[in-house]
Image (tube, rainbow, N blue to C red):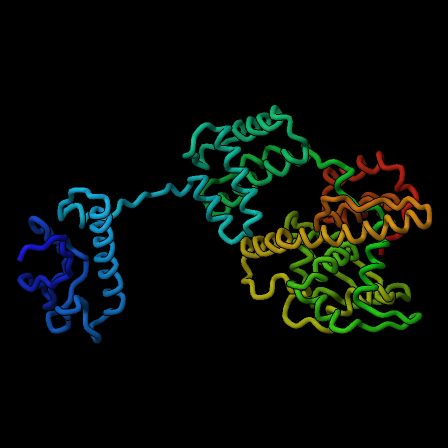
Length: 446
């Protein structure tokens, strides 16, 4: 009987017997001739279902075998149907020909970026796509190997960004992505050393000082409005509003990003990645010179430098901000950002990065609410409280703490210790502070 379309079938080649009594399972296409190929699997005749073209239940690994051979058959049928739709003349061999597998080199930059950004938020992935388009345009080709990127390439790319008249902060953020993917390549064992080990781009390209901190008077308004949202005060007494304490420890609530920012400030500007990794056991109560403190002694993930924090425990503000966590949080971490994440550095970094990226919009909406209140107070009281920058980020609390610590006479050596930074990098804050005369009379922020 002549057919009008190619027939694709799985069958058992019983004419050929192997030592264990099994026969090879073959895939056949009949159309103006016949062609067959091996599936790579075998089966004994007793366990072959000729009608349904599959291995019967009871044969070793029958589920896995059926899944693979059925997939091979369906792919062949899809190729046949595609030829039919296009009206292409085809042969059985063309129907059975497997799709070509494109092998991507292990050190392919685009492939590495895809792996690195696989669990990041869509918004963050857009910034990585912009970086990739920029870098491949500079290199002049799509197929870029990580092993080809050396110090000259990195510095040449930085110069290329300068020539495009980009501001220092944009260049710094762009180079940070290249630095991150090269660091990832080192961790994966693809390259031995990142070219950025010999290029301190962070020192050369700095953020604009007016964008990186919030004025201490603005922070006081932020703290006041936040407390009004979560507690009811009656003199020295206070209690939580409704379910506010639940929202404070719920990473999906609109209150949590505000809480996170102010908590980072209270913890002496501890970097977000380190703040998220604090554990309940890391906070130890201690009495120092008659005063009660919460003590934190850890090492920063980025620099591996020791950080020692002493936070007063007998103020209403610290009770609201810290005792809430100690009383109501369950699990290992002080904050809920990393709940359910395995103890893997890359997964932790991505989880924190996703949280910061996804909630930055919420944080900026809050800043606009605070700015509305600041504007109202300035008009009513003929005051001049600075507005919060439009581009507020979670990391801004770290810069804000450093600015005000120095402004109120703090020692730069102590600041370096608090922030877990070296003296070389901490000098950035001093340079910025010298241009901010309005901070001379800053008050304590803790």
